[in-house]
Length: 82
Image (cartoon, rainbow, N blue to C red; front, side):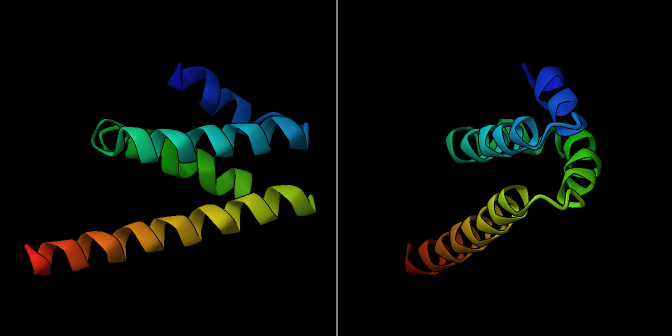
């Protein structure tokens, strides 16, 4: 499944890129450890997709970054509480 998502990040169609970014976001939420093992493959392709100039791709990319930051802060807070 991941190879197809990574291919979609290189697709010229903005909707395909947006969908791939959304799928990666869902995968990061549902299976962060498993996806973490694949980060060396994902990050370069995802970074390339962020260079897309379509506003909806840019918006989705920014939303995912905010979600990651909230998750990181949440993990830090939970780690200090427990």
